[in-house]
Image (cartoon, rainbow, N blue to C red; front, side):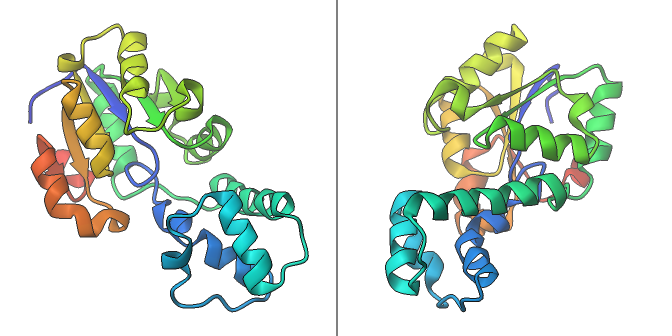
Length: 213
């Protein structure tokens, strides 16, 4: 692998083992309410916004709360997981320690709200490795748009060609690659069906950070 002084890391599914919880958030919410979710719940709500999902829960499961109240409770559920449950993926801490010893400058670019990202990073004792954290909320668009990567590069004071980007999601890797960043695809179960595409997109692809130690 080429050596880079500057590195941008995604959080969920790359450093943090959290994507499964996002996938099962609707199911976990219903179970918390004592409601058995249908087996195909994820398929039903996959393309829905949070507001649409809340309306569906009201109608399908007779939840007597406003859509806004349901959304608030769902957000509280995922926030609890960031603050108390989500763990690092294997060998993440060892790899970050290795990079720090090599004087690598690292940051995080995440779609997760900043306060939740910081909570998980602090609890897992890795926030110290990163110069800064940027959330998609800060730039107003997701990772199918290059703005978050461009902002990170500007804050690193480096060109895209001087920076390695670590991501588990195919769309984020495509965006970074098109902007000229070196891309490292990281396996996560959430994107297992896109694995072949991710391997093709990435400059290198890893199943575990152990491969980079």
